[in-house]
Length: 146
Image 1 (cartoon, rainbow, N blue to C red):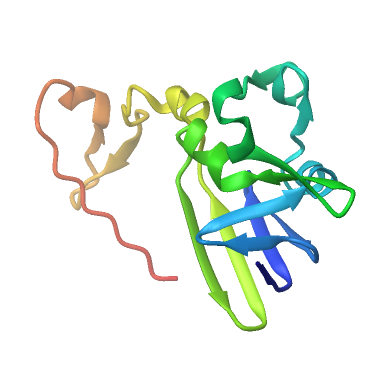
Image 2: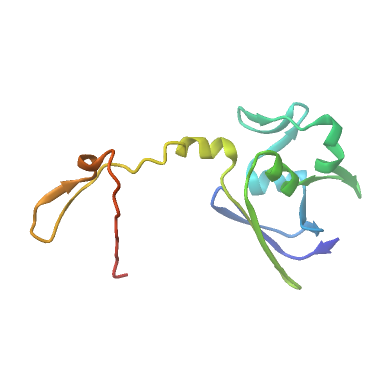
């Protein structure tokens, strides 16, 4: 296994973990570091944060958990697959960074993909609202100077 200072970005919060282990594209953390990085903890009923709990399949438990050197280690990338969470990572000899996107339960809030209504003036100063074009195809071009 590879040891390197590891930065984990979870729920858009970056946490540096010293004892993370990467093996074959899998990220293993101690259960203590799992809590620091994600606020999830391993409980008998599954991987939980407050009242949110994801059961771990008993037949695949060794894919998620293992004991090593007196500590329990958790496979965060296997958990990401379980909850349909995209993962991106980059590693070098002295550096490792892992980004975890929205879980499937978080993406359901975006299910409609409907743009919020807004009103803007055209070049002549006439106001137009997006809601006036509901049911029609709209090509929206934006630009910013920053």
